[in-house]
Image (cartoon, one colour):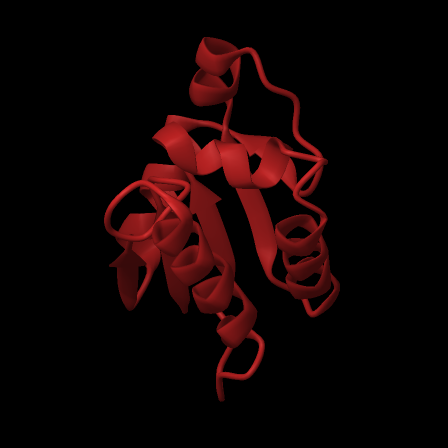
Length: 109
């Protein structure tokens, strides 16, 4: 079992390139030999699951979800930023920690 933990809405520096890299990374997941069991979005990462205006990212996440990848957004983070989930479900710290501890490995971005 493998999981991903995404803690920001960009990869690397803020700005256009960071957003392009994140979109490319997420889109490439479906091309991998083995899909992650779940993707956990925390901190600014929750902006990726809540921004209905970013139709490309939401479409990628919905496609991953349709392929069986569970999508979770940190409830504390959602509340802090006053956001609502567009794709996936709300998760909590306990469930995220249990999943990470059970995983063979976790990739963190």
